[in-house]
Image (cartoon, rainbow, N blue to C red):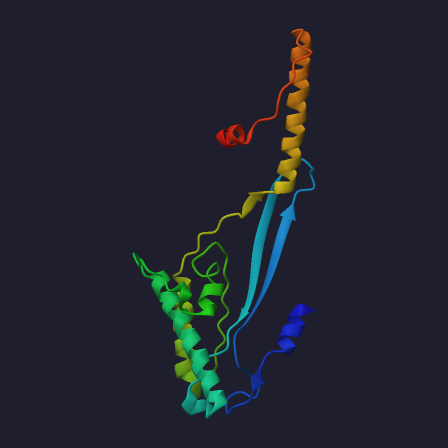
Length: 204
């Protein structure tokens, strides 16, 4: 439902090349968390799915836009240019600086481009001869993206609630063992004061 609501709220306008041209990029993100059904397992797997629809670059001479629409086209082209600069930087070996913070788009897609993700790119092109320049440009961008290598690993962490229950059970078990040891050693009247804050800090 949220996906269709976002799609219906996207800004759309018409120009000479497209009657339903989207006036901005769209990113739909799904966060998932997987926990084991085994009560004693504190293993938690987390993942994130980005569904990204990039607005196409527009040549003002072909679209014939002006005023507000022209400003939108310039903003779209600028953000796509920043994205391509990031892709080129990632594909270049030995590049120290990666411009992830140049735009909101590159920052949001940090995990998907050169990060801990599996990324699939679908490049949409025109088949008409009059759009050959845009088609070649899109294919060049897709080719550069193919050179970017992602470092994929499992996002695994411990569930704090499960760990807390486990530690509480271990403490109770240790207290029972200690009481039994004192009883066998005829030290049933021995009491143990709780650790002071200084002692607790030393244990950490």
